[in-house]
Each structure stands twice: as structure tokens, then as C-alpha cells.
Image (tube, rainbow, N blue to C red; front, side, top):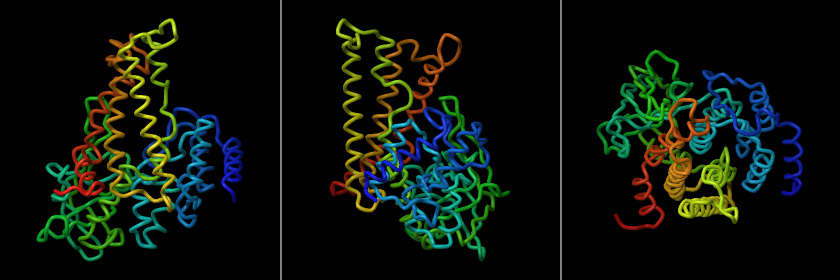
Amino acid sequence: MSLEAFREEARSWLEANCPPGARGIGQVPTGSTKITITDPDVQLWLERMSEKGWTVPTWPEAYGGAGLGTAELVVLVEEMKRIDARPPLGGMGTSMIGPTLLEYGTDEQKARHLPAIARGEIAWCQGYSEPGSGSDLASLRTRAEDAGDHFVINGQKIWTSGAQFADWMFCLVRTDPDVPKHNGISFVLLTMDQPGVSVKPIKLISGNSPFCETFFDNAVAHKVDLVGELNKGWTVGKRLLQHERSGMASLVGSQARDPGKPIAQVAKDYLGVDDQGRIADSGLRQQVLEYNMNSQAFRLTQRRTVQESQDGSTPGPATSIFKMYGTELQQDKSDLMCQLRGFRGIGWSGDTFNAEELEWTRNFLSNRAASIYSGSNEIQRNIIAKRVLGLPD
């Protein structure tokens, strides 16, 4: 099928099958069995897209995908954007562990885990960081001891995003303490609903609790869920981080518009316009212009990366460029959105502020962490220097 024929087919199908409640801003399911889908349209959209293979469109059909190539994926995202359709499914299953299992999983692991992810029947969380082992992740101390057909896990993870809602975890554990730290780590999968796992949400300054502490007290991970080779999980874990920092899905998806009003419109609403219809405050007008130019340049670079991909796979170390610059751009926007609103940009509660103003105050606070999680921007700069530019240590 030609690309234009695929576009026509996708456009027709999306227009006929995307219900009103799945368009615009709203809930995007993660697959969690612990989060209720409140809008029937959201559930219907998930079911229809899953049946079509478009919850994970580039995955093989055998695992619930549609086997689309990179060019077709770009077309699909453009057509969804055209009708303001939300993604039918999100979370770490589709963006992180799924792509990693496609590369490193056994046939049995793929058959058991990937279709459930594609159907939106399961949610995942990430067990990487520990107290004292954040940027230096390879120093992790959570132990997994051999117990025949399974491992017994003891230790603690921290900043475990969404752990309170997750059904499964992908986790880095130490299986050999007597070798250099990078060599004694294994990558395992384990269920969250077992007696040996407990979760404690951490309330952040923004008022919500996306992060958690996770404790293991003789938790069990079965050996059939060891991904990759024993003691060689560092390779698997690093590749997953590349999917997290900028997988192909996020590179394509980032081309969609940001939710809410464009930043220039917010500026005009709060600052007014001059006699030429421009943002009245010249200084803030310049900042808005610079942000929009930087944002567009970033998106064009991402689009080029997608188009240059031959097999639709996530790029390698270059993903650190997108993570570093993307989070700084995200922080710039939240800073500017608060500045544009003046004192109305620092509201926390009360009838004086509308819902959008209160949301952006929380966004400003939440985004302070964006340059730390998924690997701090300092770490990303080191990766870029060594792995992309080839600079000496």
C-alpha cells in the first residue's frame, strides 16, 4: 500500500471510530487494573485501537501491534493530531518495557507480556534508583538471591513513578556482589501484588504523589522473568533508559500540539496587545518568540531523527540530546507561563484563581524535577560528550 493510500485509510478509519470523549484533553489509560476508566468513550477508543493494532502500531502483529514502518507511524500520528485524538494507551508498558522486551526478551516472555500490554490490561513501573544510588545507578544494592526456580529480593527502590498503580515492575537487582559493580546486575520482572512488596507514595511540593518508595522483603521474581543473561542486566537496563529518554513513540508523539492554549495566546490574554496586535510587553514578547523558535527547532530535529530511522527503532546515545534539551525546554515553558500571568501565576488554591492557573502553578513546581528524573541533565551531558561526540574522559 502506498503512503498516500495508507493516509486515506487511516483518516477514514479514525474519523469513523474515534469517539468524541477521546478527543482533546482527557484521560489516557496506562493499563492499570487499579485505575478506573471513567469515560465509556475512553474505554471504547482503547478497545478499537487495540483491535486495530494501533495502541502499539510498530510492534509485530503477533504481539498486538500493526507492524507499521516509520513513515506509516508518522502519518498515523499526523492524522490523529488532525482530529485532536488522544493516544488510546500510555505508560511504561508501551514506551519502555515493551520495546525492551522486543529486543531482549525470550519468545516466551514476548508472548506472555507484550499482548497484555498492547491490549491495555497491565501497567508497569520502574525499579532503578535507590537511596544513595541515583546518578551512580550501578552502585545499587538491592539483592536477588538464587532460590532455585526464582530469586528472593530484598532491598529498596525510590522515585518509583506510579508504583501504587502498577501491576508489574521491571527491576535492576544485584545478583553477584563480588564482581565489578556493572557486571553483577540482572534485569528481572516481578509482580507488585505480592506479600514481599510494599509501596509508600512520596508527596511532592506540587501537591501530588507520582513518585514512591518501594520496599522488598523476600519478594519473588521467577527466573522465567529474567530478561537477558544473569549478571548482564546492565546492558538491558541502559537500553531501556534510551527508550525512556526518547523512544520512537515519543519522538513522533512530540510533534503533537501541547494541550491548552498556545503560549502566545496566553500572553495576549493576560498582557493585552499593542496597536499592531502584538503582545504588549516587549520583553515578554521576545521571550515568547524565543521559546516558540526553540520549540519548533526541537520538534523539527525530532522529526528528522524519525525520518532518518531505517527500522523504526529507538536511536542510541543520541537520545540523551532529546532528554537534556527537552526537559530544559519544558522548564522554560512552565517558567514563562507563570511569568505571563503575573500574580495569577503563583496561585495555589481559592476562588480567585481559575483551574488553568492553579494547574500551571503545579506544573511549574513539578517541572523542577524534569532535569533530574530519567537521568539528570548533567549525566546526559556526560553521555553526549562520551558516546555522541567521542570526547575523552
